[in-house]
Structures are given as structure tokens and as C-alpha cells.
Image 1: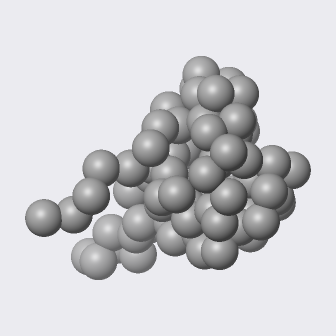
Image 2: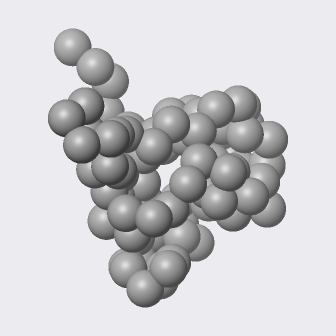
Length: 81
């Protein structure tokens, strides 16, 4: 399942998110979206997890949780068009 994580602190790195998500299951990939002009994080990321049940549990428990001083928005990512 592909998960959207928003309202992240701009200092959060991919390794940080991977560590948090691995508490729920196997993480296939983590991608913090960066601004092309500045090279700074845009404050959101996409995480791919292999097990949909584990991903659903992570969404339920982490949505609205505080992480590095910000309240995260965690939900299933919408497909690209």
C-alpha cells in the first residue's frame, strides 16, 4: 500500500520515517518530496509498505500523532493520473 504522510517537519529525513514505519511492518520505499529549486523538503512523503494490514494499522495509529513538533497527516495515497 502506498501511504501519504503530510505536515512533516522540514528536517525529517527518509531514514527517520523508515524507522517509524518499520515498527508496523516491512517498508519497501520511503520518498520525502524535495523542492527542485531549493533542495529543501516540501513537508510530505510517500511510503510504500508490503503488507496492507500493517499499513492500515500504521495509518490508524499515526494519523494525528505528533512527530518532531508537527501533527502528521497519514492516509492512503491517491493514485497518480
